[in-house]
Image (cartoon, rainbow, N blue to C red):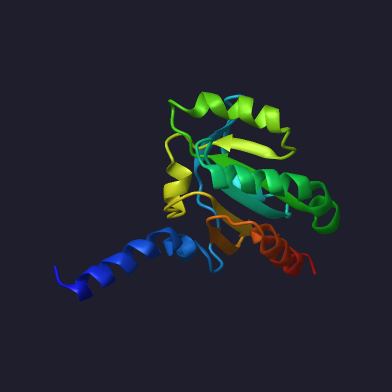
Length: 168
């Protein structure tokens, strides 16, 4: 393989985590059955029926950046609910072998938002999400208005700015 082909391949591989951006642009959530931490089946369309700004964060117990992001957002969540009437939902993509770790982890963190299990990753696939952490912001009408792949410290500030735009 020549150098140019290698460079093109390198940048194509780098772009994969960001390809989830295609879910933006006024689309709505797909209808997918997932479960809550007590095993009750819920439809993902129910997440947006209350007319609130909704943040959905896809994560896994094995994903260090995912846990950092959710712990940081957890610290801000009470303020966000008061300021912006926002609702946070965390969706674990842990498979059946690891899903038993989710509830103990969530309980230990004392997260004050809904946590759900997408064990077969049907919801993740329906949104064309390539990697976690992945954040989806949904406006009051149920439209996806912002997505973000990955997490570095400070991303929560950008998310809050996007939420603030919707609350005006």
